[in-house]
Length: 152
Image (cartoon, rainbow, N blue to C red; front, side, top):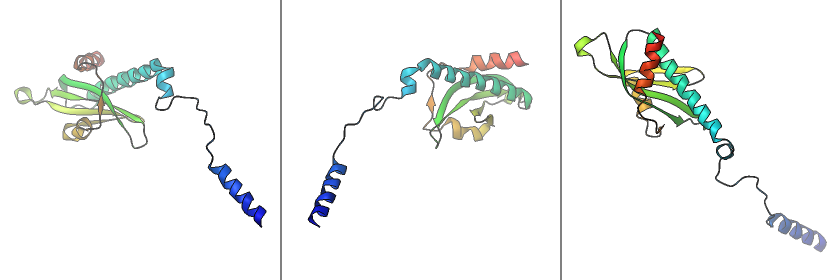
């Protein structure tokens, strides 16, 4: 019985001892960021180009409203509950059909498995999200306008 108690005591002590841990990466550093920042930039550029083209195409396909100008267009993302980046393009457009009474209207185009485009008040939930991370790129209005004009 004494040997059995000593055996369990030794087993517990062995289980509680700290063994050296070997790590293959530095804690707190994202390996994808350190190994290939150009791949991340390519992914971001790809998402931006996709959203510019999709936004312009959607405005052409679903008229009215028929935008004549864009302003305050910005690109960013939110982190989904699953930890993924969900890219979006937000801005405002001036519709042509209202003439002198035209008012700037907000829009949001979100990259999902395809895309979603929201116009007016519905877009505010995405574009005014406090957890959104906006790209430091200047206003993308001229880029969107060029893409829109080239598809007409």
